Amino acid sequence: MKPRHTHLPADCRAISDILARIGDKWSVLVVTRLGEKSLRFNEIKRSIGGISQRMLTLTLRGLERDGMVTRTVFPTIPPRVDYALTPLGRDLLAPVSALGDWALRNQAKIARAREEFDRQAA
Amino acid sequence: MKPRHTHLPADCRAISDILARIGDKWSVLVVTRLGEKSLRFNEIKRSIGGISQRMLTLTLRGLERDGMVTRTVFPTIPPRVDYALTPLGRDLLAPVSALGDWALRNQAKIARAREEFDRQAA
DNA sequence: CCGCATCCAACAGGATACTG
DNA sequence: CAGTATCCTGTTGGATGCGG
Image 1 (cartoon, each protein chain N blue to C red):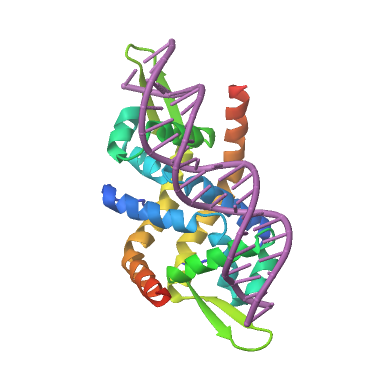
Image 2: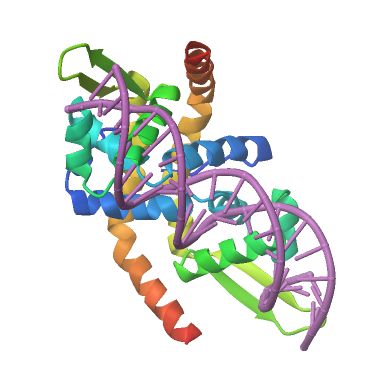
């Protein structure tokens, strides 16, 4: 896989913007959860564990705004809301998974580098 | 390119950690700059444009700590410091570029989704 | 069940001034 | 040139309580 990265500043900004969007604390976790199947609000919440209600709401809104996720409300009592990936969101899963695989393959190496660096600093 | 994403919470955390690391405001910009060739501190600064001295220092320290970047000091006057990617850093460039390409391909779609969403909200 | 509003602590990040 | 130190601001994100 050849990098072939663009050297144009404007393009790099675009990349940076997208990364900032999905690189926040929860988006990737949410998207990967929805990659399996569509889920209800509290299903996502329980599935992730550690995310506050507030942040899940905000994260889902952001993803919805960017066209990654659809929000379907069933006007029942109690209310039921389903979240699912759009084609765009599903499409995103591929490069994110690639990065995720890289992260898994190299996490030991990174951890060791950190220890070494911190040891030197002390 | 098949996703094959892991469904294990722990793995997803690792992915999330890495994304948080390189998903900050400047890391990707710096790494892609260094992907071309090794650069001096102010070369990076000028090349990016808009980054403060403070943030460039912090970003480079972070990347160095994680083993992505090497820092070479030439004890001359005036001092000269070269930054370069490690093999690990260069290796990271591939999946990041993949994500970058995705971002470029889909930025119009995302922009349109945003406009649509914001229009609805109003 | 879903989610909004409020409050608050922590942190990220810019501007500026100073050092070897 | 390549930082460090200080200050100050906006944003992020958790906790809690209320409402449809």
